[in-house]
Image (cartoon, rainbow, N blue to C red; front, top):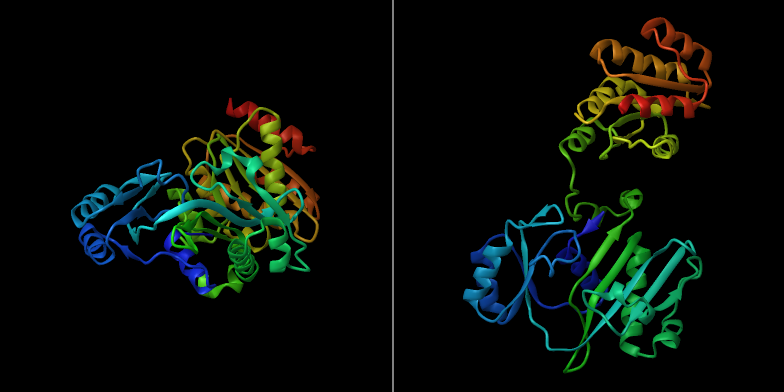
Amino acid sequence: MDLEEAEGKRVLAEAGIAVPPGELCADAEAAAAAAERLGPCAIKAQVPAGKRGKAGGVRLVDNVADARAAAEAILGMEIAGHRVSRVLVEKRADIAQELYVAVLNDVESRAPLILFSATGGMDIEDNPEALIRIPVDIMQGVERKQIFSRVQDDDVSDVLARLYDIYARTDAELVEINPLARLRGGGLLALDCKLTIDDAALYRQPGLAGRGAREKLSALEERGRELGLKYIELPGDIGVLANGAGLTMTTMDVIEHYGGAPANFLEIGGEAYTKATAALELVLANPRVKSLIVNFCGAFARTDVMAEGVVRAWETLQPTLPVFFSVHGTGEEEAVRLIRERLELEPFDRMEDAVRAAVAAAR
């Protein structure tokens, strides 16, 4: 879950990291009134996406009239597929230097990683050699003196220690300030904030769960959410129904291995098999789908029970596109017999053969 900048900055402020005075506004008149109170300011689109400045979603203004015009231009914009419905009007800072600080999940070490660079700004990724990397043992955490030994700056060490506390306390995947401004009059100020919370940990974060930016979903993904199904729309033309997220992703990988492209992620394992008709209808509602692979592998879950759900759904919906089954595990014999007798189809002995058949049919 991504928090928009204004919400992320609230978390920073609660942790004792300084942020500029600002007001969240939903229309140009409110933005103009905020600018009158704040003076020279920045008008910033509130969407969960980077590169807002390059997209024209961040504008510096000196007076109320310019603030109104900037807000009118930004509100309603599309940035990275997100429509701007609010702007943050924020008091301008007297910047001496732009820094970069972050704490994130490091894939290589499978541990938290603290990052610092004395060069911040929009193109930090173009200067990776300037980054100081501080790996953290998640069981031990990190102390300010450890950070100071690498960055040699008391103020930055303090911000990074607080940033790590936010990361650990909120189950974050990423907490980033870019830029962190060193002010001409002294002190540091967070001019931006990116905060991403682990979706699987939201039940432990009731105070943050309702503050995240609305996820961008397609119409079919919205329908899947309403039905309680884990559906992700993809650009391919081969529909996928499988039990368990791991088997679903494996099936998608095999489709791509044989030159095809999956049209969706959708697993109907566990109790979701009772929603087989809704799941099948969801997959078939995608006009790009030309063939379907149904892949079941049961250990504790019985494949015959899952197959019964899909067969009943097929009989109800009566689709005409080609479908290919691969069924293995507990209840396999019953499942195969069910598919043969009621759909007059022969399941494949090997998943790879079922996938190749689906890829060929889609062509």
